[in-house]
Each structure stands twice: as structure tokens, then as C-alpha cells.
Length: 97
Image (cartoon, rainbow, N blue to C red; front, side):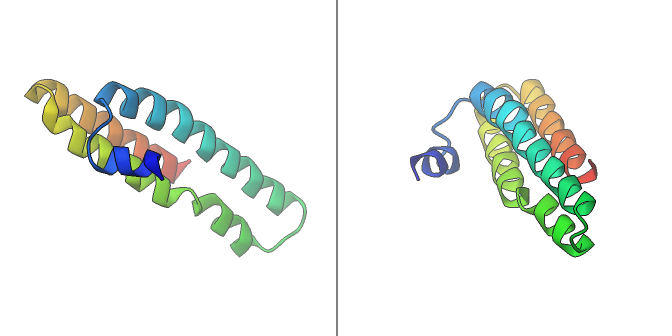
């Protein structure tokens, strides 16, 4: 619960949000669910179940993206736009992949 509270109240530095939470944890989480969805299809379960499993981490993705977007207000303007663009690109890649 503290994890969510700290990120929703902008108590975590942008470097931690962007690099550790989004790129490392988020990417590993998404790749894990992607692998599980592929396994579900390979085992012959319904496709809708695989799609559901694939999109299960989406609330986390949107939460971290929103936290990065809010935290970017605390850094210089150019760096903020770079962080926001990077975070938005990551979110788009996680949806596409």
C-alpha cells in the first residue's frame, strides 16, 4: 500500500519512477504476462483468456505512466517533456507488444 501511496503523492523521484519502476519492473511484469498469455494459447485455452491475461498489468502500466507524468512537473521543462515522451512511448510499446 505504501508503494501506491508514495507514487500517487509524488514522493518518489522521477529517476526511480522512470528507470526502476517503469522500465525495469514494468517491463519485466509485462513480459511475464506476455509469456503467460502465449503459454495459455499454446496449451489450447480460449483466446479470450490469453487476451485477458495479456492486459492484466494494464492498470499498473497506466498508474506508473501517470506517476511519471505528474512527477515530471518537479524537473526542468525540457527534461520533463523528455520524461513524459519516454513514458508515453513505453506505455504504447507495452500495449502493442
